[in-house]
Image (cartoon, rainbow, N blue to C red):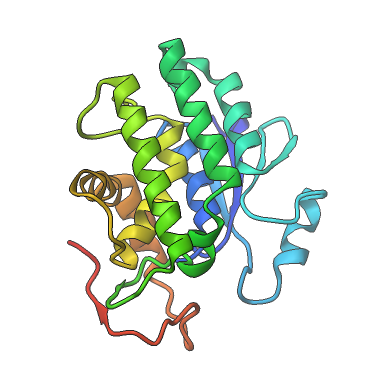
Length: 229
């Protein structure tokens, strides 16, 4: 088994949204891997990633054969190609096409939401006031999540019925909605709760909380509440 193990290089779990995506696509689909923590906040990131050239961001993946894969879309397609039996993409072609669309839009869009609400998994910021641009991003999320359910027929739970890469890619967005108490519909909030209550997500968050920060990155100067149980 060791010979078939992937090596995944990630940033700090509490904050690195893209690292969360990389980890979930291995963890949730039962692919064997080792995790290596890169010094995202300690100043050693460039040195830590030097052996993975030309990768310069986390996450980065080394295949069992030694090939380096950067960027989560490339990682997702590589793993799906190498492990068709694992079910990273939905089986039905219409579902698969919609899941790919969702992932691609997540990878390239929602800039206002990302900038205003950096992922943090420690607490809930209370009283955050989203800008019009963030509201626009949230409206788009509502639209495409609802459209995904129209395609899949799943009224609750995972977007395409069964867990797939679309849920991997939107996990950090769900965490942002919860972590900043952002205004979304009851249906969208229920989906976000499904995401953050998933055992894999909870395991990721618990590991991240073992590390403390002073000062805390991305402090908003707002009152904070407990993360949902």
